Image (cartoon, rainbow, N blue to C red; front, side, top):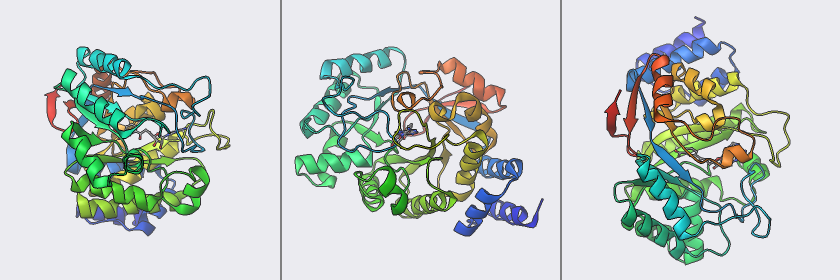
Length: 359
Ligand code: V47
């Protein structure tokens, strides 16, 4: 092993942090297998052979959005023919299907709709919980929480507290994209700034809710921007401890207004997952979101520092509208098979990473 990688190994073994410069050097290194082995070492120290998944269902209640992010193939203007907004009974029908299928979590996010009032989301939350008392709701990113505060004239703290009172259990990690302003300005100029995303997320954590964090990679950013992104997340996690999982999202190019020849390839995806694991020493979970990565890369990623395969998903629109060629849904049995065939132990979890069943 070359001296640089030997230094990184020693740091992992002694549970010391790697620096931003070292993370950048890892991104620039060619030895994918050595990086993967180091990430595997870091992951095994934290999680052993256990790999988490959950039985969940996504519900995207509207695709109408005022933000017009350039990477996004999901969001529409309200007058476009394929714009939609589910009413309460449509959402309840999907939640009931999820409960009947054994789901323990709803992952619920949507566009920033210009007309729906905050009361719509409160009613959504309260009614879903009343009809599906056992299900956990992971909903509304920091971007949506900020928006709800603006449309309701409540503070962010009040918005979070109302949603929590009605049953919000955790929040997903979307909307982080890439924090560096020179890239963020180009890919999502109308979205809240990185500083605001981090501030709202810190308030979510301060209210006692856990959240996730994502990074959209493989478009116009470079390695420096990825390291900057990871560094802001590591810093916030040091202060709040509220992040559960980090989820690098591989950019899907179709129907997007970011014109690049291709998204990240398999090597880039594995490297990014592995370096995330090594760098984010204060994150317990690194998730391979198979919808964007594809199932095969996600399975191999279990040897590159990943300990979470997300879930059954059931109905996915954000990645598939942008050309993701993964399936719409996975059976629990298929997820278990994938994990076992990677030589790891499948653990079905709930939203807060409590074991539900070890297979
Ligand atoms: O914020 C949008 C991304 C995110 C594209 O927290 C795209 O457990 C790739 O955050 N190519 C939403 N990505 C999805 C998300 C998520 C998914 C799974 C689990 C969790 C979790 C969170 O999807 C958006 C944006 O970053 N996105 N368009 C695209 N063309």
